[in-house]
Image (cartoon, rainbow, N blue to C red; front, side, top):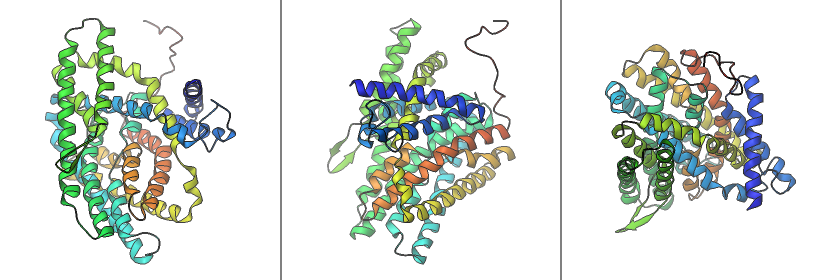
Length: 423
């Protein structure tokens, strides 16, 4: 226990100290946290096997998954706050159109490119693996995007649209992956499962939205019994923890495997709560302040989880580079086309696709499922390599896009250690 506590403390301190360097380089703090994780991970200082000084093995990192899952739950809960009815009336339909189209186009582009790679070099990648990677390509990481928006206090049409699209992306990606993985499994085994391809993904989405709605309503009801700000914040934190725990449950009904999507459940909880609680905005801001250390740990641990051994595999690097280029082209062209279709302003049309490049947790979860295919190890390693690249450069590209449209204000020079003038 003491080793894990020391590891967490070192992770927090290391991430924050490195963020001072990235600030001088005009890079987002998220990049610092991820690099800190790489340095402290089993392929960095952790390899020295000094207890508490870094993460000594991937098993030790995986043992802290409760921290990353909890942080992801709070991130999704916060994103749910973006789905306020007043905002949805203005941009909801367009955001849904963009969210669906850009994901589908990305999957199609990656599928076409990787299947072409299979036709040219059958020994490198199979069609089932290509189809699975195409679906995984649709997923976008909400965590890195949210952290960049928070750090620079970004606000404007692109930022608000981006938050909605990232949230919608999870549901679309889940459906695309379930369908593609079902087809890939059928091609590998010679039999098609309608339950696995159609029924189970729809059941997962419906159950997730239902559980999230119930938890959001219940949170608002319980909040009414408390009047102190600190107690109301505490009950909110408790409910998010409870929601994260419930979303991990799995069961089987009539031969149908039933589970929940953590992101969808927590997003729906935040959506319902923010629309029925009159003081939700003030409460959300207090919860955000409480979760900052948790978010830092999320990215440091995510960085430590990245397996650098994939860089020593030539096939992984070849397919990985093709995947990254195809996915980037798909995200950009899909966003550009859907923005033009929904009559978005040119600054949004030109920059939205770039902000959708980060990829992490959701894609890694899909990759673990894909690993059950005959050549699933390649799919997993390609996604690991892509996540390594996207997580290191994605936040910076997101920052530059938001700067380009004028939605990030220049960072101030004020310090929390000094009382602001006029305060």
